[in-house]
Image 1 (cartoon, helix red, strand yellow):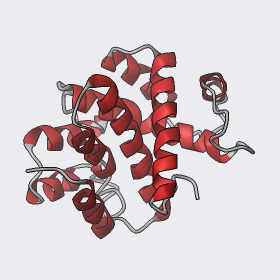
Image 2: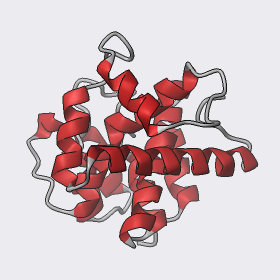
Image 3: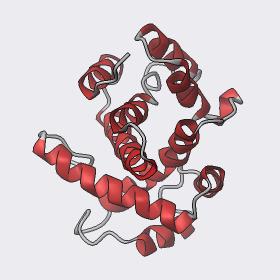
Image 4: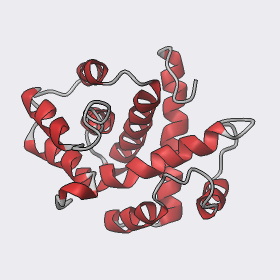
Length: 189
């Protein structure tokens, strides 16, 4: 099955109404696209995986991501794609054996954290630095729902330095915000 962004976005819109969840999925899509470029992988496929990773969260928060894996299978997504989505939650005990799965896991929490940082900045994306993200990571009162240990452990699992990991995600999100603005969308607006 050829993965097209339009199809993935359409599927996401069928299952997600909350603006905040939609924006989170767009941020994870951005990070996955950035890593796909970095690793020489299929940008559309990786982006779709990021876009659809929480396809079931709004309707099935207690059993997420299991209903999502069924939605994806029924929509024709292959086993590697579905397994990556299943493995992005530690609750499923699904081994993350592919680079796709490890990357999705590693960018999920971090993408949300970067967006949280952007939202409190007066200049939003302009001048966003890794140093400021790392400083906010130390502030346990800021975005306290985000699991800092998972951010660090997932970078290790992916085999990337945490500073480099944050930079890759920041760069990807900043670039994608520009692209989304051209489509009439935004990660923060």
